[in-house]
Image 1: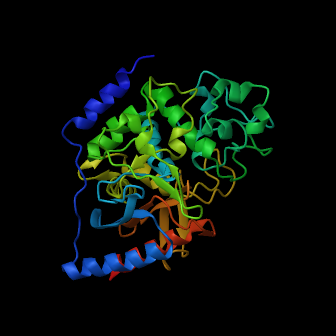
Image 2: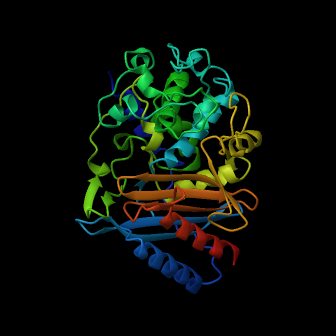
Length: 395
């Protein structure tokens, strides 16, 4: 297979429109920013954070940004505004933008059978007469299980999707529940978003998202670091409890070749690398009408649909209690607010991006290692940072 797609992507990244990070602050005076930085520093230190970026959003704009700690402990490299972090499961929320663009163009629908998109059927063998749909996948009601083939794929042993869905161990990839009737969080479903994009677009997931999402917004980001500019600064990841490094994406030498939907079903679940500034631009679009900086990613009605709880809608026949690849949290993190967004937890780190569309506010937190303990599935560090962020956004 050839390397042309990756080379084309690198050329696209070098074209005008890809901007470097810049300082944002709408504070009334420098002292206000310093006080905010000190508050975040104390919180991040309390949760034993290795390195972090934070971005605050208000009224459709990035209004303040913060950095903390080290991107590389061994070489004592500090985090800067240009440091890129792996964002783990927040990748699902960002990848959903690309999928919903395909829904808008009519290349795929939310409630038709997902297997019709691929050259092989996708059915739960316990309920072979019940179609599995994209709406179910994006609301975590498709009954997909991470326990067998997906788990093997994340450890480097990738089986083709055709065999995953029609092989001797197909039952291992599903719950014994009817699709659409129960919510069960699935990384496998998040990874299928990338296969769907590659199947329908004929491009790799990196090429598609760069062309239609990242480059128009001036964002440098990628699911494969080998397809990002060579001088991209990427934070190493650490497990604070073991005090050891868990992942060094700067040394990721993997090649990304041509589109291969049958084998590329793990990347969109949690492999995306970007900055807090880039992620803040995504939540500006999702908190508003689907556009940011004059660039439209999605139509207003599509963004509204993404934020809508998928309870008993279309092919979902249960209370999904979430939007389309969006968590919805009411009165848990900030009293009186319903926040939309996603959290990522992997390799000892926590990332989070949550927003309130009523006043288009939001907070982004990226880390490369911290105390990743949770309360009701939301990391304690994310709760603390978001709560402080909203204090600053509303003072």
